[in-house]
Length: 356
Image (tube, rainbow, N blue to C red; front, top):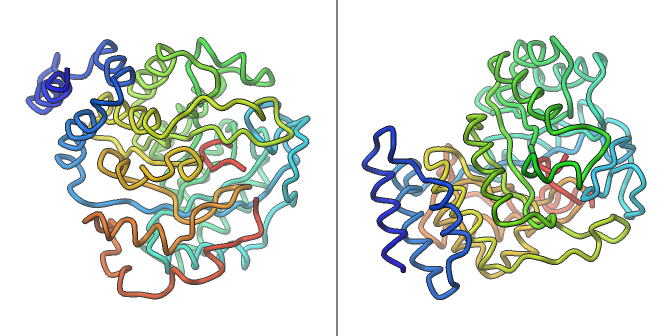
């Protein structure tokens, strides 16, 4: 069976209109025996190395606004009805945003993800984010800025683009066939519409999923092929963090090996796209985090939105120790900025931008 995955990788690398991974291929990767895990990783790694070499893109989250959300996403600690004990606040100042972003950039990040809770931004909210973006780009001209603000209205994506925002994150989170079981205050089509608005405005679409929401194997495959059809440039793969006080507080469906297979499946389906190890990696991948970098090429540095991540210095060491370099910041290993407590603890405490 292990040769099967190498054959799939070879077919994909050879190219051609009919050479991409099929749904049957993706399901075979997801359902591979644990004894074949290294064969799956080796095959997926061929695709990763072809398109991204030994680079790892490092992203850093700035949580602009926490909690106070009217949406009822069952997985989210910030959602309507959640009893999770999280920090709640409305909009960081521009100076505090720049301070937090600067700490992440000093630690090796090249993309800053600015996130706010809520259904979607008002026009005043858009003005705040554009002002922050312009100030950030003035100080760090080469930084990539990704905004994650919820459902967009007409014209808002264009304003973000004009201010220098590079990408927009809005996850589909799960398969269309499973969506209504995890949230009822907005639809799957609402999410797809926002991704379309971002693409039309010239923003790079960033959209991914959350695994472990009670979906079937077939629905995980469905979600990944939907992301392929949406042409998402970067695909954050989150693993459910079942926080107390949320409807999913007792949902534990993931093992480290399954998480690696999910990431590998994403690589087979979308071989040339950024596959990002996102929320829940420390909790669910555990000792297999480094192995996961053999198939994924991107991760978040430090903390997430309302949960504490792995020590940023440990992330940098993990990247270095496994023979990888940080994309666009190859000299980050020679600095000591990753010891900065501003990276390690930012007073936040559940999901990543991708879960917003």
